[in-house]
Length: 427
Ligand SMILES: Cc1ncc(C[n+]2csc(CCOP(=O)(O)OP(=O)(O)O)c2C)c(N)n1
Ligand SMILES: [Mg+2]
Image (cartoon, rainbow, N blue to C red; front, side, top):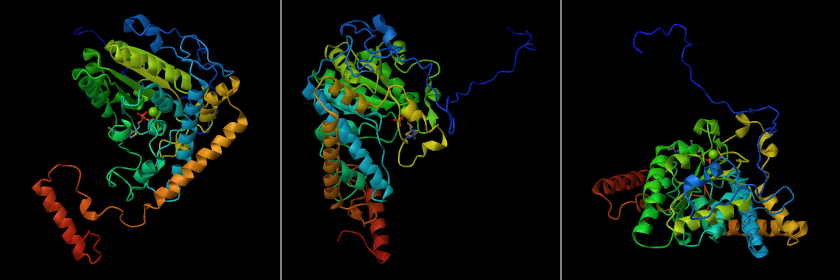
């Protein structure tokens, strides 16, 4: 109101989020509300999104503390499928360990682990059809492993060596695997969201029956691309599953900076009028069941589902990160939703379909499989062992026909290389 006095009001101030625990702090997750497994209801896949808003604030959980599968979301999988899923998660973990070490040994410049988040990608891969199209971020290498991509191909890409089908043009771990329905990873966060929604719209426009699935981190939901994708997905009821992997950290920024103090990430769905689910991301059965449910909705033209997968990034963001600088070292161990590999293993043991001995054997077998693949990949070259791609191929693969200015730049590069007296150019 014009002319009124503000003299009695406090000065304006901003709220700046602060994580609960910093380096050196004792971690206490008491008071952190973990809804019991089996408690969330499972709506019919034909129900309207407005009928189950509470699922955006709760947590769909299937595996209880004793390793039993309980409640309406139990996907009732066969022991054989459970064992295959467990094996993919163990293989992913072994792959991550080995490639992390390869980076520390100077064999590649960069690597990113998915430790603690194995169920997010692996269980989704098993729930989707093999020809559904995946638009991953950089932490869903589990999709490739679960879909049977040869480990040596993934490693060739990580080493940017002569076996790298991408010709060394992508940052290590930014795979592109058309054969496995795995869209090229982009370092520009959340660009895959509008791409996935567009692909899903095209699939529907063509009258196809394949659906799309997309993943981004909770931090990446702050990008505008996330929101324009949600608008298109809602308006056209695009057949796409939109996953938000809430591992609580975006490098050194905690999830509060992306809005986690105010509401959940699944609740973003409510504003767009699309289906929303908040799921225990460390519970492979819950991830599987939620993905199946969302896939069924998509296939029945009920539109997209936004799934928040609540998890914890158990290690550093990447090999370039040192999390001890910004969060308490105790956090990872104290995280109340546990380890996804251990939880699935315990479930199989509780069913009488697995044992600690078999698990230890499998750990060894997976480590051996990864070691053998690494040996084969390293025969194609590692970082620092010379130029693996012909220098004149540097400009290839972008345009179908190279524009004149790039032809000129390439020639200039080759001329300078020749004049340097140590020409690398292919003759
Ligand atoms: C558009 C854009 N902004 C910033 C970055 C730098 N960056 C790379 S990863 C990352 C954190 C992303 O965190 P989150 O979305 O939570 O995914 P997470 O790594 O936890 O899986 C940032 C800021 C980037 N790659 N692209
Ligand atoms: Mg994150």
